[in-house]
Image 1 (cartoon, rainbow, N blue to C red):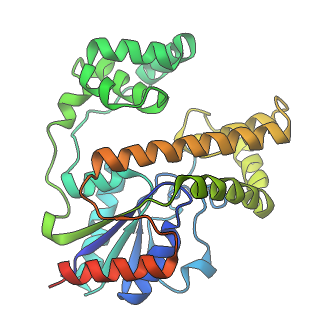
Image 2 (image 1 turned 45 degrees about the vertical axis):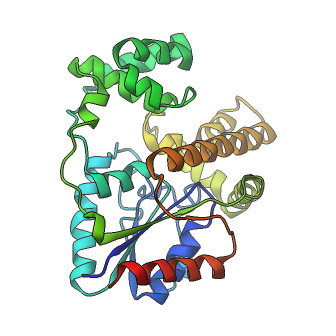
Image 3 (image 1 turned 90 degrees about the vertical axis):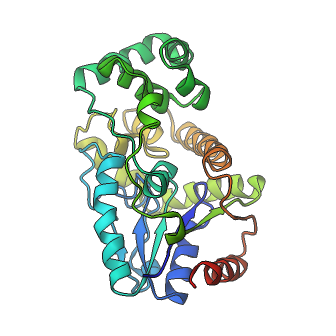
Length: 309
């Protein structure tokens, strides 16, 4: 079976274009590893590739989950496993692409078997975060799970909240669960990982331009449709890049310029955290700093020849 190619990088770094170029050159099929591109209703806001971009190349696990559902890493892994195996059995190259590093980590290192967290515990942690702020949440986590607290960024409310709710629900630190992983889907000799690391100034400028382009392509209309569904604002789909600020504008709480500026700012901050994730979690993955598509394709092709022997 041909080794899989895993493409990771910060948002707006050109992962989609590279995945399509690689799949076309190496007779591949693309598997989504982005936690927002799984949602049906988030086509524009998640920058999901359209039919023209796909260029006839099979794409898997894109837009198959209703926005009103909570979709987990475990669910993705369960669905990705047979898809990747099927691609490989047919003699093709599985190109797994996305900005959700946890998906790729689970694929290559296994998944922690964490029990489900009851909804009442989720709401309790949400109220704590609202009352004490992200700093208060971090302080609480430092007491019960210092290992997880040290690993999670101070401003990452979602991951801090996740770690604290696991402890509240189980009495066991999240870090302890994470140290006990299931077997990976892909063994070390069955995949090649690539991290895109373009210059940050250029990436941040591209993030701003892309968001403006999204607005022209219908992001506001997409946000209005989501808000009209009455979906719980704490569900992942409602926290997609820009969605909280577009929702606030739709509710009349802020003006359009403020919504756009805040959405761009938060997306740039998210990209910064993704750079940090790459450095910590994927220290040995080859980096491609060049933003040039042709250069990226040449590098991936050369590296793939080394592993596909």
